[in-house]
Amino acid sequence: MSFTTVPVALGARSYDIRIGSGLLAEAAQHLAPLLAAPKVILVVDEAVEMVARTMLLSLAKHGIATDIVTIPAGEAAKSFAGLEALINRLLEYAPDRKTTLIAVGGGVVGDLAGFAASILLRGVDFIQVPTTLLAQVDSSVGGKTGINTRAGKNLVGSFYQPRRVLIDLDVLTTLPPRELKAGYAEILKYGLIMDAEFFAWCEREGEKLLAGNIALRELAIATCCHKKAQIVGEDERESDRRALLNFGHTFGHALEAEAGYDGSLLHGEAVAIGMVMGCRLSEKLGLLAQGSAMRLARHLRAVGMKTQLSETGHAWQVEGITRHFVRDKKAEAGALTFIVLEAIGQASILKNVAPELAREVVAEMLEGTWST
Ligand SMILES: NC(=O)c1ccc[n+]([C@@H]2O[C@H](COP(=O)([O-])OP(=O)(O)OC[C@H]3O[C@@H](n4cnc5c(N)ncnc54)[C@H](O)[C@@H]3O)[C@@H](O)[C@H]2O)c1
Ligand SMILES: [Zn+2]
Image (cartoon, rainbow, N blue to C red; front, side):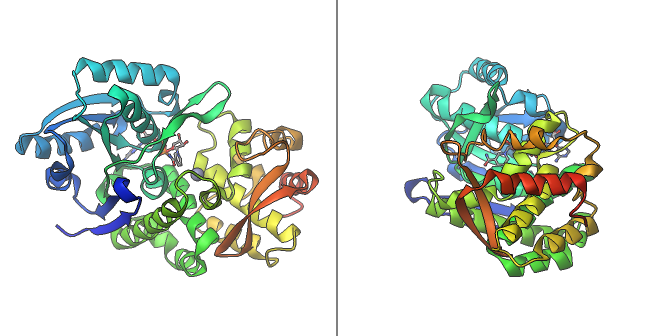
């Protein structure tokens, strides 16, 4: 049983991330020692039901009582209605305070089941089994859970840490290439904000990683989990440093909101373009060497990702995009705050960014006056 372990140091709430191939077939070995009682409920994205069955076999063999609740695929499940439905179904299995919930799916199921765990019977243990690349390098680590509301995404939730994150690389074989690339954008993010060498490594190995090289995937996922663990260990509740993980996200969230969350622009796809815009903003502010945005765009293009708004098939308007900046959770009292780069591998939080400058970045992306 070979795997990589990445610790998340949070005092009494510390936990390990385990990364490797074939871990779910041995789920009991990895999880049984953590269980307060031999009773778990798997909360499973319908797209990965087979994965849950594999886990169930292992758990049942070790005498662990296992129930399964299936969640329909897609962001709509992450809502008040989805939460209510999930909680009611969980209660049908008569859980007690020693029952453990196991989230098996992408960021949607992880966020939803994590939130449900934090309020079910005033809090039961939960374990993350992320099955998308995005969830493996980002959403399953760090304890942010929650749902979307009419007013916006992720506005209701809790900080609630899992007891373990179990990452099986084999589950990625069924993930559509588009989803894989969307997750890859978040991998690049860690290089851009905190590790120039890792970014250069991605430039060299990214294509092979995306094509299916397991060893490269394991290394990249472990590196990202390690970096996220480091940031979360320093600033669990995002009072400052954790915000660096939002690089490219103010632009990206605005694009997602404008696209209407209809699946035409995935979060990671929006973040990829958003990071190019974040680099452009940083260049315009005189913080980042000219040519950095171009370097990022070149690599995105090399792995088959979009870097231009014109490629996304939407009728974008500058005002349509910029109006979302002030609604971003990071906006304090109307002033714009952006995560900027001072170099590839070094990010900082910049308050009071002139809205005109952010507008200029959007406009040049739309007009194609800055082109790759
Ligand atoms: N909590 C956090 O810190 C955090 C961080 C980033 C994103 N998020 C949230 O994560 C969500 C996005 O996560 P996501 O990109 O994983 O989306 P997702 O959970 O919707 O999964 C994407 C798609 O892939 C399918 N899928 C999942 N695993 C699969 C597999 N192994 N094979 C085939 N199909 C599979 C799903 O059914 C879905 O259709 C958003 O709601 C976002 O807000 C949370
Ligand atoms: Zn993101």
